[in-house]
Structures are given as C-alpha cells and as structure tokens.
Image (cartoon, rainbow, N blue to C red; front, side, top):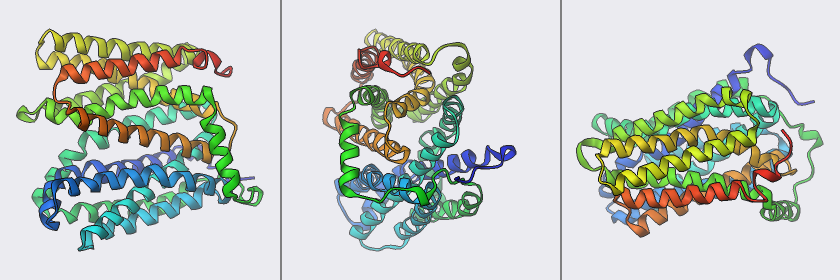
Length: 396
C-alpha cells in the first residue's frame, strides 16, 4: 500500500504544496516589472524580451504531458521532488547565464520544472482525499496562491529598487530550496511504483486521444477554460485599461480579494446544495457580474463602480473553479497523473490563447473587455447546461 500521512498532520502536505505553487507563480508574475531591465541588459528588442514570458508558459504547458504518466508509473513523490530540485537549478541559472538564448532556455526549464512539480502534487491531493475534502482543500489553496498574481508585480518592482534583476531569481531559487526538506518529509506517496504499468508511448498517446474524445470531460474543461480566459484577459489588459495612479494594482488586489471570498464559501455551499446546483449558481453569478460590468462600462459609470461590479465575477469564479476542476477529473477513468496533466496542459494553452487574443485585439477599454468576458462566461454557462455538461455528470 502507498504511504499515507499521519492524520494529525494531514494539513502539512497541502500547506507545503500551496507554498510551492506560490513560488512557481511568482517566477512569472514577479518577473513582469523586470522586462524592460532585461531588455536593456541583454540588448534585445521588446518582442524578444517578451519571449521570456512565452518561454515559461510553453514549457509549463507541454512538459506535464510527459511527467504526468511518469508519476503514474514511478510515484508522485519522486516526480514532485525532482521538479522542485530542477526549479531551484533553473532559477539559479536564470540569474547567472550571460547569453540571452541561454536565459530563454533556463526560463523554459523553470516553467517546466515548476508546473510538473505542482501537477504531481495535485494528482496526489485528489487521490489522497475524497471528493468533498479535496474540493475544500483546493479552494483553500486557491485562496492563498491567488496572492501570487495579485502581489507578484508589486513585489518584483520593490525588489528592483533593492537589487539587480538577477536578485529575484536568486530569491526564487532560495525559496524553492527551502521547501525541499518540508516536501521530502511531508509529501505522501499515493502510487505504488511496484504495481505501475510499463511506460509506453503508444499507450500514453492512446490515453490522451481518449481524453480528447471524452465529450463530457472536454465540455466541462471548456467551461473551466472560458472562465479562466476572462481572468487572464483582465490580468493582461488591466494595466492598459487602468493606467492612472496605479489603478490596476488596487483593482487587482480587490479582484483577488473577491476571488478569495468565493473560495471561502465553497465549504459551506457544498454542505447545503448538490454539486451541480452549486456549479450552475456560481456560473450564474459570473454571468451577472460580467453583464453588470458591461452595462456600467457602456453607461460610462465611474471606474470604481465598473471594477466593483467585476468583483462579482471574481467571487463567482472563486466559488466555481475548485469544484469544477474536480468534476472535470471525475469524468475520466485514466490514471490520475495523466488526467491532471491533460487538464493542466489544456488550461495553460487556454491562458496562452487568451494572452494572444488580448494582444491581437489590443484590449485597452473596459467596454471591450467586458463584452469579451460576457461572451466567454455565456459560452461557459451554455456548455455547463448542455446535454454533455453537468446533466451528464456522475452522481455525487
């Protein structure tokens, strides 16, 4: 049997995984203010400097398709710890490499390592705990990890005042290194490597093809991605929509606060309503929030009111995403590591497409953002209420 954590210390593993995820997110969000400095340091164009963001994302999106099945075969614990160690090395490499091409390669490695470690951890969470407990844990973890995108840019800007830009990568490497021992002590093994099947590229490919053809799973995953797309559009376009007096920083902190409120409601609502009813209600709140935001933007309402109404969408997202993630996983029968890898990779691709959409349309007005956001959440609601949506979900 795989090892299980001591009941009295069940919280240690989720806590350590949550801290690791914060560090991984900071490696992207904290780095954003350093882009102009990195551009000047390496003497490259702005577009080339921005490749260091895409490099991290591309690594994060693709590596899990390999490491997910590997963790099914050799165990979650070893894959997670290997990912953390590689994250430490690649973060340190970002700080010391002198050529821009090598720096890009280190960024790819950093994105790969961070995401493969956290995806192995989430697979263990959903194997170790029953559905309701896993949802509560993920909602609790989401309420903390969202602080990375909220505070990362401000932290990065502050660090640039105190040290060269390489200092933030030294800090990231140090923080990850500090988590190695707690993770080594607290991460349980939920897979027995002795019983794992032999790795086969043909079998893995067939499993991923089966997931792609799994209509009910892809329907709910599409719903998740559409809601996530709105959050990415806000993060990418917000600095252009709210240029004056650091307005985006405060708006981002408010939006993340509303998201945290939503996550804190998950546990209570789970005890009161069936999960499909809860998910539909959360989606309805997202739709109301984006519709109200669009109406306020079209009526030229004060910015504080437009941003305040957007908070309704963020609260609905906080209530929605953790239970919807579990519902997506429940739609498939493949090994958990492979399922988590597929879901996380699709989510990363959706985030990359949202960034590309924001750049293509040059979203810099609240009206445009609100319209796109409303269309996205209406699409998510339609998917959830379709024949293959929540109506086809297994009994909870």
